[in-house]
Length: 126
Image 1: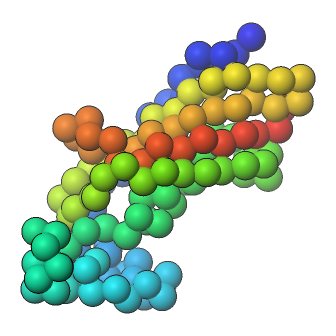
Image 2 (image 1 turned 135 degrees about the vertical axis):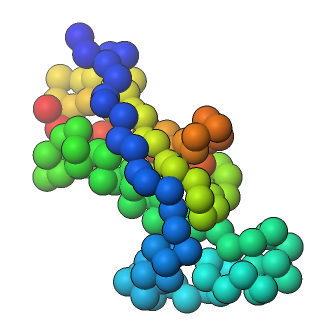
């Protein structure tokens, strides 16, 4: 009945270096490829990259705007590409299938060039 329904997009502001430093502190992930430009350059990354779990958090936040979070039963992601400071991330989602008791959905996180950074699947109780 609701298969194909698209959720309202959730748009995040440009990722900043300060945001990455704060996220490192909050998450305990102090890998310098996320916060120290010379280290990220030496690692061959062309500069610092955002924590994948930060982008996953954006997707989780979007799901929480689409459904009451207590209805979330499953949430899986696959990281597709690196995200860099200065990129704005948009989360899009839709219902892919439904059963008598739940909706099976997918979400993607893209930048302003429509490059996919993350693909997620999630299931919520009706």
